[in-house]
Length: 460
Image 1 (spheres, rainbow, N blue to C red):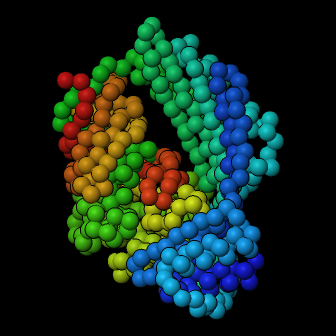
Image 2 (cartoon, rainbow, N blue to C red):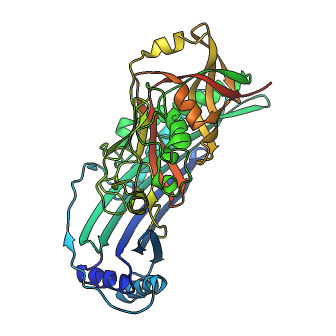
Image 3 (cartoon, rainbow, N blue to C red):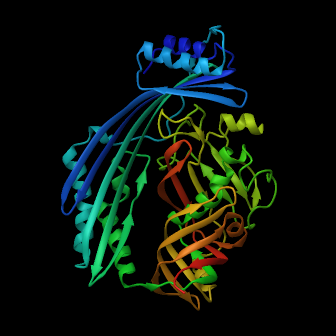
């Protein structure tokens, strides 16, 4: 992408005024999208993002600049602007780069950009048609097929020169069902760090039908009662609560600046002994996986919490300098215009020893949250509020009538301690996580879990 000799020159300029480290991040990303609505293809998008970001360190202070001008003149100008922000003087350093090739654990069978457009449109049409035909009460099925082909180059003053390419594919179908004056929606949006072979794992028809079933369930559901109760949260996207309420508090972004509820708690019990939580960017083909992070470090499996004990944080280079801890392969960014920071990859609660049927059978009265929606969290306090997109009342150990309008309200510390049963059906759900370095793909996950007591928002 950029000649080695030019990279060495740019890095030398970036540290010429006193910086003790500098890096160059170059990106070329092709984003594809197809939207289907009301029985027809509504829009097709195909765009390219190209540019370079240059960062310099002076201890725990950083300077960052980016440019879409990838000519020699543009890169030199960008490096000089970084150097000028660092300090005065001009003493160009001699940098020598050595190329390193990391193993690719995410092979791609069908590269989206090379696939026939008709084939891609047919995949989306099949999903939306299956949703519309599932029930006469389905009045709309909107679908999106999103593909990303992401290539990066990273070089730094420690001599590292490396490249990587990563491809992702995802389909999202949102269904609206109506009966009389009542309307409700459902959604299904699986994805993988793979090519279009993703839809050999996920049949597009099943995606559409799953979204339709959720919309129809909510259409006939009564309102959820409010109050403190026992809640069973299902696998897959149910893990979004751990991701938001606890995961962000374990990132060096907040821990390293003293703004996390988890500061200074390594080695302490922060969760029930039933809880083991992991962030693993090495899972082949997973939505949040990458071969290397955006600072050129290999991703790895990080055990964050083991049997309730806090074992590790997620640490990028700046966090490593602030905290005196090793980097963990968690530095990520949306694109070259963002300075990277510590972020999650595939974060999940591991399988436990409880049988799933025993978890439901143990609840005399409570809520079964089959599917979770969006929400909000304060990383300093861990306070969260998450919507339940599909829920059911549990009575005498049996899943009963569907309810809607439920939300789960609490704090990360509280919910971690109140998880008293962990099942054995670990699965993940896909999302886009927003933070200071932009929006990045992340997997969330867990098996079925039981929370002994949590506040459920609903109708009084």
